[in-house]
Each structure stands twice: as structure tokens, then as C-alpha cells.
Length: 280
Image (cartoon, rainbow, N blue to C red):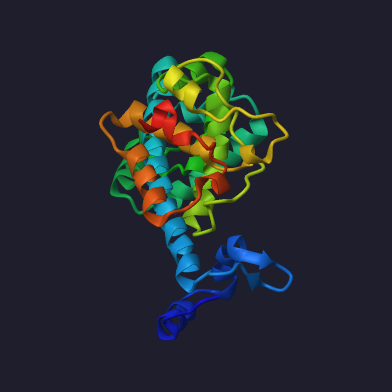
């Protein structure tokens, strides 16, 4: 490896765990067993990939946050409206699996008891029910918890009503929420994201918005490229267009890839990805 500025390299390495940095060396290695680098590889090449991945995580978290806030709102509105109660989350008959429901309710109880939010304290004192109304408690739900509550709703009509807001079928929505909770956890805990394989991949829509459908990378189920994040990025870009109106998330992703000169094919992107509708 070429290291033109050893002092700078030593400083950065003093701040990074060896195994974190080593993960970004792998694409540049000619022989992993001997850790021999490809000719011409410099420290800056590896560090550039590390910085790219960090900025990618922040961009992904930005999109997930917006979707998470939107999903909280839609879950609260549709369940309270469709079941004419401020506390649908306290009605076990609305949910399919009693074990999952019990676990979700216990988690919510713990989060309410630990919460320092003033609105939670106020509503806990105001209402006689065991928990505040759903439009309050959803604000304590993580993406993972939202996914579990949503997928456990008994009536398909309820799941479909929420999914329709995003132009998706409820099965696709359920699958994507589960997948997104995994992506969110990796990103939030600073794990490598850019070329990671995910065994839990989202179900892809087969009908609906043509801009979305035409931009997805449809491959045989056995193709390992499906485990990469390209289709996740397509769905996030689509959701940003759906819930945020004028936004530049897709453009920001393109600019991030271009500015760091990262090969998107190594991230599972199709070679013609920039010609796909969602990126234009």
C-alpha cells in the first residue's frame, strides 16, 4: 500500500479500530491470505471508501427517519379511525399473533415507563387506560417495533389501507419494513453498509408505479446481487418521492457515489442504473 503521508495515516488509524479499517481494505487486496494489495493502491483509496460508507449510512438513515415518522402517523391514524378508539393498541383482537402482540405491548410498556417526554407523562396522568393514545405511543416506537406492530395486524384491509398511502401492496410493505429495520440497525450502529449482503431481502413489487417497477433490479432468487442494497435504495428513493414531494434524495445518492468514485456494481447496482427512471 502506498502511504504518501505517514503521519496523517497514523493519526486516522489511531482513531479507527483495526478490524473496522481492515474491512475496507478487502476490495483492494490482490490476495487476502497474504494481505497483498493490488498495484497502485494507496491509503487514501481505502480511507475514501471508509468515508463514503459513513456518508452513505447518514443518507440512508435520513430516508429511513422520514419514512419511520410517516409510518407512525399512518399506523396511528388508520387503526384509531378504522376501529373507532384512541387505544387500538390495547385491543388484542385487532392483532393476529398473541405472543408477538404480548411482546410488543410489554416493550411499549417499558418504553412508556422509561420515557422522559413531557407529553407521555401528561397523557399517562390524564387517561385512565393503561397506556396513552396510539397517536402518542407511536412516537416511542422504533422502526423495528413499527414493523412488528404493522405485520401483526389481523385484518388485511387495515394493512392494505396503510400500504396504499405509499402505493404498495401490504405484502410488499410488510417485507420492506422488516428489511428496513435490519438496514436501519446496521446503519445506526455504524456497521459497514456499502457492499454488505443482507439475507433478509425485500419482496419486490410486480405492479404499481411504473417508475418504481422499471427501476428495480429483477434477478433470479439465487442471484447474490439481490442481497446487496440497490433495490433498497430504489424503494427508499421512491418513498421519498411519495412522502416528501420535492426532495433530492436520489440526486444526493448519485452525487455521493460520483464524488467518491466508488464502483456501484460492487454494491449490486446494474451497469445501466443511472438510466433507470427513479434516478432521473
